[in-house]
Length: 416
Ligand SMILES: Cc1ncc(COP(=O)(O)O)c(C=O)c1O
Image (spheres, rainbow, N blue to C red):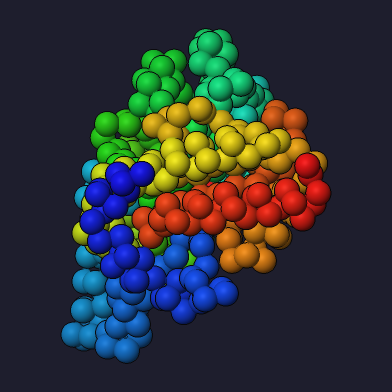
């Protein structure tokens, strides 16, 4: 496993940029943070960008005409512009939201209420996070519309034959996750979008686990809505992004009403301002947007291709090592190239929470639970899994610690 350090020659230098990893140690060694799929660590430049706003450029944006306010506005809109161009989007089509959950809700409450009617069909997949299920349930219940799910096959991929059958019924929307937060599956988004568009459906993608870990170029995917969340992408909490196709965003009513999103307000009605601000009512997450802009700059500096190669090598190493642990079953696709940056597993005779607890007591941070994907847990026939997930700062030594920790779990719980 020399590949990892070859691809990122300065792995130690990169890891040193994450303050929580610098500041927290466990038994003389740093914590092995293997939970970036839940939330990533934050590199120094992101914190500095936010601190600099609070210490040097703090003012409200868009409304002020004095130089300080103009500077803050330029920083905020500059961050949007860099985020948009990184993914091949435009500023008008790049809307800030609180997180991807809010981004998806925005579509369900605006586009959904305008376009989904009684008897219509909305198609999701069995591997969705609750964030891309519950908003559509609320919509379909409200509209008396139907919700159908594309099944997950045993190899962790989607059953595209069933998708085709559902598409033949002319659904209004197909919603799917780009990279599953449980299986790691990388879905063939461009192909599914092509088929869905041919059937007249709008396509929404949850990119929460894709944007931080692999190159995403929206023009190639050609979807209508693509949401992601800043706190999994080395950015701050409290900010996410919805990219939407301009023609659809223009047609959609606003989500939340208030200041900043209007052009005129009369006693009984209002008109809306231009994109993207029509969907950004109230004072924006200014520091958070600056932080997310800095996160994108930071990722670009390291190189998303190098990050992808690095985490893929770690996933390959993890699959190889964990496959030798007796009683351990890995969920999802067999190969690292078909996966995002995570490996979920179950261990015979051990509850995932106990596994995570024992690993945690050894400074190895992993996630256990249903991962906000209860329909998928039911499909897999397990109540929960343990999940190790990776980011650019992780090393093969941390995979070793995971492996050794799992052997310790086996002996602590007397699984032999
Ligand atoms: C695939 C996926 N979608 C959506 C979410 C929800 O993200 P957030 O809570 O930032 O909206 C997560 C993270 O938990 C996720 O992994």
